[in-house]
Length: 192
Ligand SMILES: Cc1cc2nc3c(=O)[nH]c(=O)nc-3n(C[C@H](O)[C@H](O)[C@H](O)COP(=O)(O)O)c2cc1C
Image (cartoon, rainbow, N blue to C red; front, side, top):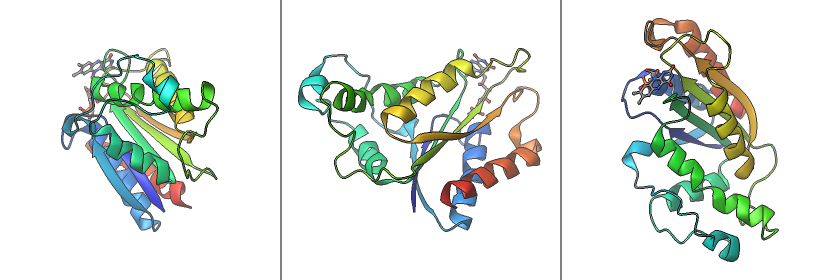
């Protein structure tokens, strides 16, 4: 089973990547395979809102998004991750999400399937997010969650699990083994 992992943090070995790596260990231990896209290493230009996808069912921008699209079409599991930046996801992660407007347009305007030859049965996705501050009111992750839920819906993955880690400014995830175990277990559950 193929999993696509989208890493939305620019910091190698940072909190977000460490959690994603733990989840990927779980994926692999359960017999899955994963391909990781580090959004900061990709050339994914912002959506232009031009309406081309609403007419043609595809995006007119030719860049690395085609590699992501190809995997999103045939993967059976998705891990999307980002640090919280000004309440939302990081800007390259958001650019990738916005470029999925084509799937919204295909389904809702053109009444097509999101992807041609799509595997639709039981595709699930996990959201992994980290934030520097304490989640006092319980809403720290809400704007990012809302964005990612809409993204998963557009690309036909069920939002099945989330790992939301606050307070990384004071305590890095590397010092919190219980969170890494949680991420590992969530990764394994994607496959089982
Ligand atoms: C540009 C920027 C904006 C941030 N905005 C927020 C924020 O709105 N709320 C918050 O709790 N932390 C915020 N942070 C802190 C990060 O979410 C936190 O340090 C995160 O764990 C970083 O993940 P990383 O270790 O994978 O880079 C921000 C950090 C940066 C660099």
